[in-house]
Image (cartoon, rainbow, N blue to C red; front, side, top):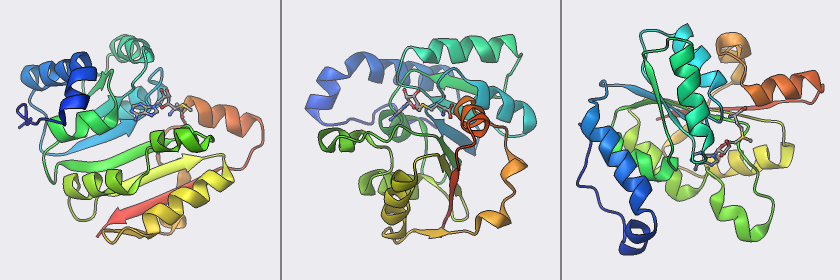
Length: 204
Ligand SMILES: C[S@@+](CC[C@H](N)C(=O)[O-])C[C@H]1O[C@@H](n2cnc3c(N)ncnc32)[C@H](O)[C@@H]1O
């Protein structure tokens, strides 16, 4: 059940009023299943559409905070995908409203933006506070699945995850890389022969 009454602080509510209303409207219009898979950074929706087709028994929600969410929505429609939706929203805003505690089956974060500049670092998705939120929303055994082609960024994310008491690393070889479809960025990286770093964690 969506928590439509969830309130952020006054500043967030004021400056992100439209986005928060969009999330709440989605929550009013749809009851999500007991378990939800979330992709952060859906972009034009290739991965979301393909993974939803690959796992028709799961429900996938995509968060894409740019206008590309519209392209992703069109793609889902074009592909006839009914077990996925995409929202034009920051995942940090969507999670507290739409996802109940224990409802988040898995989180996909594929080729996230590294936000190199120090002053932009707070825009990185994997932050201690974000992991607190994920730990709250995920049941024991839930998975975080991250891929990036930026080695130092992978190290930073691993460090942040390793410092969190509620998550433990899993051996990537336990989880075949071919298990999921390739995202658009992943195809590009593979074509360029660039190494890919896979980070795979489990909620304790
Ligand atoms: C480098 S692109 C990767 C796109 C895609 N995952 C892929 O692998 O091809 C990162 C995407 O994440 C989106 N994004 C970054 N932070 C986000 C957040 N907090 N919530 C929702 N979308 C986010 C960006 O707008 C962008 O579309």
